[in-house]
Length: 107
Image (cartoon, rainbow, N blue to C red; front, top):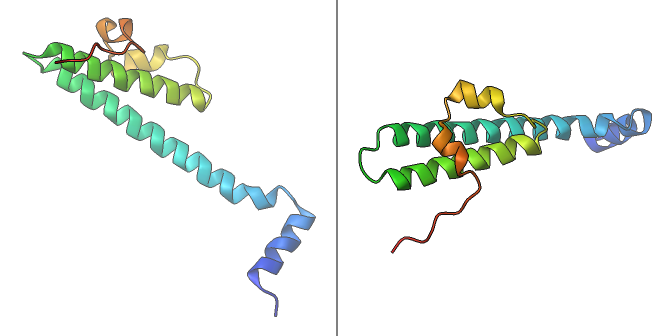
């Protein structure tokens, strides 16, 4: 009786690409999940920014950081253009203007 490992080894000898298909699928699923979580963070910070009557600078810094992180993550998975998501998510110009900038330390 052969083991699962023996069967997988045989499959890899016949079709080497089959050995990586499962892990490739897992990686793609993790990327999609992570990108979804990053988009949810953007939406949360944009909502907080829209409803921030006071302390707007903190909310603006949080939104900029979330959007910048989201854009970097999108680029890492191959999405280089962001115009569509800027419109879909309603990312304001004041958030886009300061992307990547670190806020001054607050005392």
